[in-house]
Figure 1 (cartoon, rainbow, N blue to C red):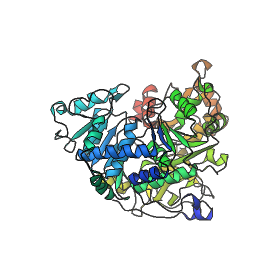
Figure 2 (cartoon, one colour; figure 1 turned 180 degrees about the vertical axis):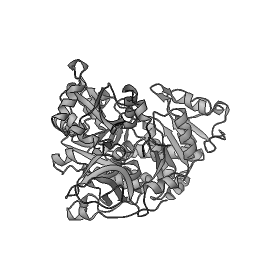
Figure 3 (cartoon, rainbow, N blue to C red; figure 1 turned 180 degrees about the horizontal axis):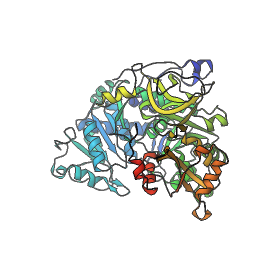
Figure 4 (cartoon, rainbow, N blue to C red; figure 1 turned 120 degrees about the vertical axis):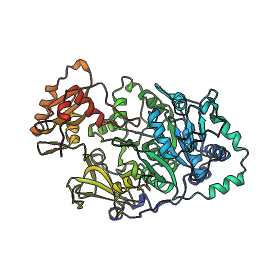
Length: 576
């Protein structure tokens, strides 16, 4: 369990938005699934477009119970950590809810991890079991696990021992072929579960508390090692409820989920928002524009989530006009700063007239602000909305901690039911993120207007300081998105001996044959913005380095820029 801060945002009451969440829900994820299954037993819960997996809420709940019993038969239970390393397959969802039913903690593994990262996560998280698929792209998960666990092949099921991973005992393999040596096959779980009576299962389920940690998600670790964010049933159920409310989800909606389940975007903004509103889910195993467009059209999805780069790839795809999006109504664009132009194109070309923007971070379950379908289009394309119900937000001076007034840039902070319990076994890091008064410090630069609508202007560490001038990359990016020959853009700071930093624009052109050159970009910025914001450097690229969840890794862009621009000497200069 963890301590929960309960604060009601007074602005929500005054402005009449409290109807979205009348009260916080005190229910576990597992019990909520059963409740939905009882209320909408024959309604569609999950429909895959590319495999024969279709379940009503009752069928899905019953299958989850059988898997949960299988975990119990393996000796797993309340408080045990079960890691899952898989794409958006049905077994991922089954593992999530089965863990919730027995009080186990689901530890999500990034699908792009390799042996070093997997070893760190399994060891740091004290995971007792690992559920895994065969692999993804060029990474064979089975080979990685056997490299990490060389004696697994010779171990009896459930008796694996490794002094480097003292907690790990069980590996469960998800696939159509026979399980590798030393691993359980997923299909054996239901058979194992037959040894667990309904009375035993219900007794275990009754002990699970809404304040228990149910999910541990590892931060991307752009600095230092990744940290395990501990989230409770209470955190993610209520955040999912508020998110779904802002989109006006009902049991008549269908959400296409192409964002990865292992990320908060998939698990909370998608799965929990769907669960709390009995909204049907149409998962896509791994993101591909054609797979998403096909699923939306054939399943008549009313909602679609994605990061900006996902929507850009769909809009720019050569087969875009072959698909119909007439069923789409709403969804979320989030995960990284949302270009205004891209939002407008999604509204105009994909018919998502009620699309919303959510802002937050994993440590906040993750949403702290959001626009709603009732907000004007202007607000929905230019802000990240207002504070979620029951969440307090503020802007502070990063240096002094002083609370700032409207339209003053500073660090975004949040406090409320949605804030994590902390980082697993990292008390010092937790104290650095959450202050003594319970405020989570985001590290993001933002401003709030007189009506409580927030705009995110960048990361504190991403802000470019050129000769004493503060330059916000997002401002330049927003302008360059309007350039007819620019498909995507990221603005970064690169080292400069003279000015400390210089502006560098990384550009993906719409077409290489258009002949776009650096001077075109520089002249365009100069004609519309202050001279010190004009990029000294312009780099043309085919793609940006991204995480598996679609977030652009600006720190890797900087490394690439330093190498391509030969700025190693400038980068080596020490600064205070």
